Image: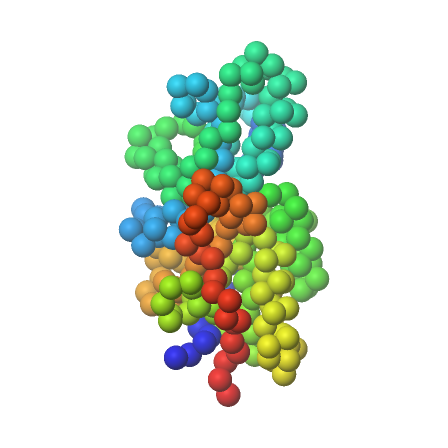
Amino acid sequence: MKSFIRLGATLGIAGSVFLTGLSGIGNLPGMGNLEAIALPQDQVVKKLQEVPVFTLTNPKGEFVVLSRKNNASKPISQVGFFISKQDAQKFLDNRLKKENPQLAGTLQVRPLSLADYYKIVQESKKKSDSVIYTLVPTQQQVASATSMLNQNGKKVEQFNGIPLFVPKFKKDNSYLTIPLAKGNERYIPFFFEKEQAVALLDEFKKAVPKEADNTEIQVVDLYGVMEALNSSSDPSINKIVLYPSRESINFIRSLAPNQSPAAKPAAAPAQAPKK
């Protein structure tokens, strides 16, 4: 079985889809929503189900809607969903407790899946809901993505989106693959953390040193990947696995100590294309 998959054309387009940021709102430190994403398919929802996100709710389980006027003095209502639980907690502790301590004292950080967020946005679109559901990336990973793009000659001031990091081969635009814990099929890991992608690539370089110079880490946008999952006719696109951050993996394990995350790779290293 081939241990690499070529998705250059598909992800070359997907990777260029960067949604407009919401930094001008000033209410949440997030960027982007799912306005440009097509209706979900079961396979997309299944992949998104593996990734936790975190939001703030009141004791009734209702989302916290924050409002603020934009430059045109038109009120904007916004609900934030954080990739990092720590970021959600910091926003509650360092921002909301200072601005509205009475409200903040009633709130809690609630976990959902990325699939839940996806469905909420789709339902909002159907109802013409005026609330903006914002997915907030980890700022450290945004900085890493921006730095990597600039190092590769793509001049950007800031990565506007949710960055994913993908180990790949330079020459034939193919991607490293990993076996999952069960089964013999190999999949393409898309990491929410640069450090995870670097660790996998370093492991591969040690196993196959002759291919070390032929490898790199590509930065793509989560929204672009979801668009590709929805619209691409390339069957290889189904080999993509969204691999949660280390923080999220620890959170998943804390919920089910005896159950490993579904996206955890087996010990076998990634392999290079066969010559």
